[in-house]
Image 1: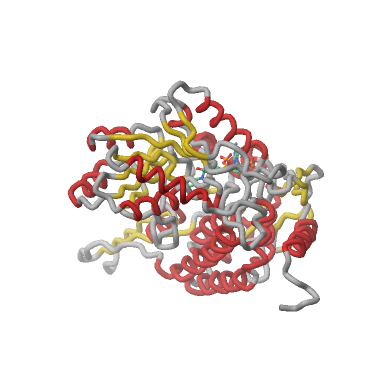
Image 2: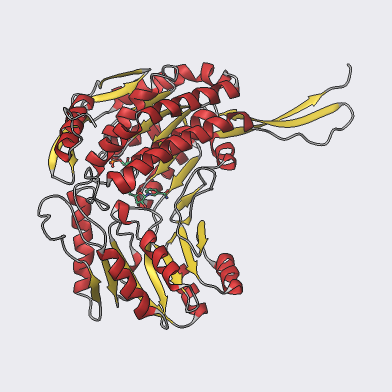
Length: 503
Ligand code: NAP
C-alpha cells in the first residue's frame, strides 16, 4: 500500500465526498456530462452520517425534452448498427465500468448506506456482468420462419422499439442501471434513465463512463423527482417503451401513463415474500437460507427479501434460536468500513417507516419483538437499525401484509401444509417464495401451487444474469435478466409475408 495515501476510513470518506461534489449538478445528455438546464436541485444525503454530500438537478420539461431528443437522434444509427458490433460496444462499455468498479462501488455505499464489503462491491460486479451478458446476446435477437409454401415466404423479425424510458429505485442502483440499459441497448434501442432521488450520484458516474465508449445520445440520464422528471419521461410521445422498477403504487401510475399512448411496460415491483420451513428440513441449511433471505447486506431493502418466515411448529424454537444467534453476529456501521457487514437504511423517511411498523407491532396484543426493535448501541447518528423479528401479529395486520422494506420480518408457526400454502399465497404480492424441505413431493406441490415468479427450494439465492426474474400479482409484469425477456420486452415483432413467385 502507498503509505502517503493510506486507505483509511477517513481517506475513503474524503475521496467520496470530493467525487460527490464533482458529480453534483450534472446530468448526461447527448454524449456529455453537463449541468442541467433546470435551475432547481435537491440534496443528496449520506444516510450513515446524515450529512449532505451533494446535490442533483431537479430536471423538468427542458431537460427531459433534450434527453429524449438526443436519444431519438441517436436511434436510427444505433438500431441499424450490426447487432454483434453493437454487442461488442456494450462489452467494451462493461469492461470500462469494470476498470472503475471499486470507485463506483464506494460512491454507491456513500449515498445508499449499503455496506461496501457485503453489498456494493458485489453489486458493482453484477452490474458489469449484466451489461456484458446482454452485449454477448445482441446477435441472438431472432425471429421465426414459417413452413415454406410454394410461392410465398412468411417470417417474423424483431425490431428495436425506439427510445426506452427507464426508471429505477435506490436500493441497488448499480445493478438496476444495467438491468435496464443492457437489454434495451443490446436490442438496438436508445435510453433515457432516471435514478431515484436518494441515490443519483453513482448512476451519474456510470453514465459519465459510458459516454467514453458508447456513441453520443445512446444512453442519457436525467435526475429529478418521480412525479416530475419520471412522469415526463413516461408521458413523452417519443418514448416507446417504459421499463420500471419500484413500488407497486408507482407501478400502477406508470401503467396509466403507458395506457394513454399504448406503449408496453415492464414493471418489477414490490414483494412480501414467504419462506416456509418444513419439519423435515435440514435445520442449518434452513437457518442459512433465512439469514440470506433477510437480505441484511441491504438492511432488508430488497424486493425479494423473505420477510414472512413460516416455521413448522416442530422446528420453530430451534430455528428461531439459531436465527437470532446468527443475526446478532453481523457488524453494523459505516458502510465504507471494510469490517462492516450491515450499513444504514437509505433515508430518514424510510427509517421512520420502519419505526412506525415496529411500533405498530409493539401495540398489537399478543405480538412480541423477538430481537432488534431499536438502534444499534453506539450508533446514534445515521439511519441504523437492528434486525427485527416479530412473532404473534395477526395475518391481517399491516405488519404482516405490507412491504415494510427494512430489516423487519414476521415469524409464525404452522402445522398443516395445506394451510401454510394458503397462507403463503394470501398476499397481494407474488414476487419470491422459498421452501426448505427434504420432502420431494411437498417441494413439487409448493412449486406448482405457489403464486410467485421467483421460486426456490432449499436455497436463498438472488437474481443474476441469465436467470429470469420477475413477479406476478402486485409484484409486476414481465421478466428481466434473460435472453427471452430481452426479445419479448425490448423489441417488437414484424410479420413479413412475401410473394416469391415470378410475376
Ligand atoms: P418508488 O417510490 O416506487 O420509486 C421508484 C422510482 O420511480 C424512483 O426513481 C422514483 O423517483 C420514481 N417515481 C416515483 N413516482 C413516479 C411517477 N409518478 N412517475 C414516474 N416515476 C416515478 O420505489 P423506491 O422507494 O425507490 O424503491 C423501493 C421499491 O422498489 C420497493 O417496493 C421494492 O420492492 C421495489 N423494487 C422492486 C424490484 C424488483 O425487481 N421487483 C427491485 C428493487 C426494488 P423518486 O424517488 O426520485 O421520486
